[in-house]
Length: 284
Image 1 (cartoon, rainbow, N blue to C red):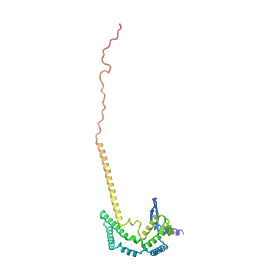
Image 2: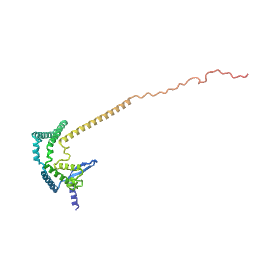
Image 3: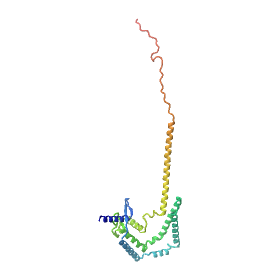
Image 4: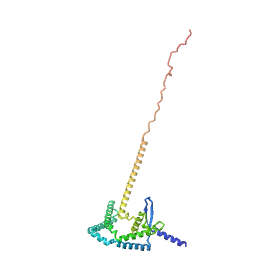
């Protein structure tokens, strides 16, 4: 019986440990920890129901579908042959430079790697800007509105606290959340999780990884040079002290001071000069 309880406890702990974690920093600089758990079958069915409900309502409200939006963008000249050609050119260039960056030989100079990494970053940003021309309008299509509803529902069901309890008791509680930063962060993390991306995927792209390695190498070189200069300065200071000590030891000692002796005067002492003896006073 004890073994069964212990096994159940370990199974629960394994489930808790396998959850994906993310953090949120509060205005008071407190770090809050939250977790993403796998949805249950019921969660998935209800999320799909939310998708269908919102999609049908969007149709009734005369929102455009994705295909209708593409036709409208083409009609307005937002999507044309030049745009399509430029988009394809940037994609090909980005793929080529990514391959070049990942296959650079180890003996390539940091300058070559840095130049390629910066070009990859530039192309990725250009591709993002081109896609935004379409992604903005497409966000208001029936399909995207419905997908947002499904993501919101899953977010309300699979975000957990440290102890495994749900952060929101139901979908309405999630929609009524006063902490906007928490709900937005949770939804964003669930979107990344659904797409198989890590929270820090933007920091771990090949170009960012290469740039960090280059920066670290340069920093290590600067530290090593400073340490070498410091060691040389200390060595020079020690040599100077040794030289000064040796010079002091080689200097001759000063001649000893000779005390001056006071010469004794010869002759009679002062006040005893030769004088004639005066005759004694004689009586009358």
